[in-house]
Length: 40
Image (cartoon, rainbow, N blue to C red; front, side, top):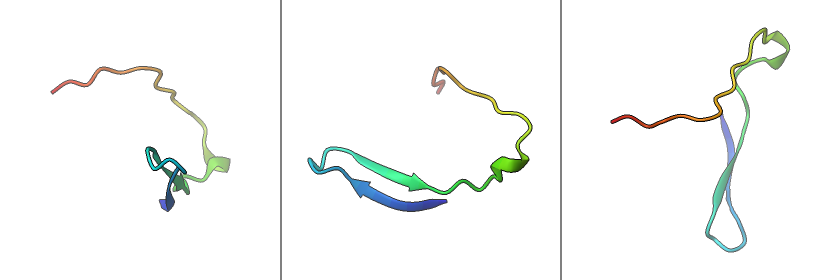
């Protein structure tokens, strides 16, 4: 869930503060995606 969206001082970059919907205490596996190709 998006908690807040902010723009940096220069106005060039926006970023969001997120609240995860998953309960991290209950995670048993985590997959990390290091790279990917976009396919149309």
